[in-house]
Length: 310
Image (cartoon, rainbow, N blue to C red; front, side, top):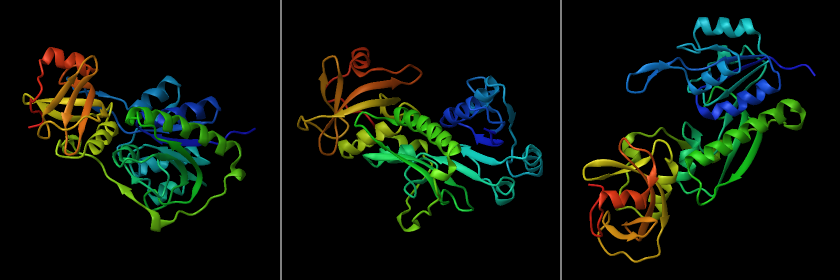
């Protein structure tokens, strides 16, 4: 069976399973990713996660500063793609670029039209969703609004965090994309219902800060939404402390929000919130690796009644 010529646009780790799957299927590929960015303490320019994967697969990689520039248009046109696929690329493909292929698809980790925008995985967790999913849709001029070709639902477990859910959805996207390409006729396009659309936004550092005056369940969901990267945080002795995992406690409040309610042997420490206590089980101190909260509190000499977060 003849393989389609595909331009694949992506940047983050989310796009890697789909790229690997297309490569294994032997599709002719042109990979487009964001330019190198300074990373680490020495700010040495490094390729994106997807670009590194593409180079490992010995694929041609193009990293324009502007995906819609004349140079980009000429490069894509010369490749003569039959399909353009984007997955976590981070830039809008304008009409001139989209018109260079008969079909343009995007892999989006939500059940569109819910959670259109840049942070659907984090937002699903932050809002306490019990289900989310993966959508493959035809790109249009409006963000995440094109006709849907494939949609898969995923249950969100109580112990899911961003990293786990991201991994599952990325792999699901790769599987769904290959099924679609093998049998396009089995996936007719259907329009989205714009009246049901919701949107999510990018998060700043202050969105990651834990407010202990909030309900414990909301704080638990905030912790899940940003673990393991970039990490919801609080302050302890004026130093940032990332909270990586937590559980709701049944125990009664015994102090103001942000105070240590109890030290739970071999597990962690419980913090008073607005309505109940939250058991912290995993943390990451500044400049250190992720560790058990019990081990952290032993070294930090935490005590019941101690205030954190301010």
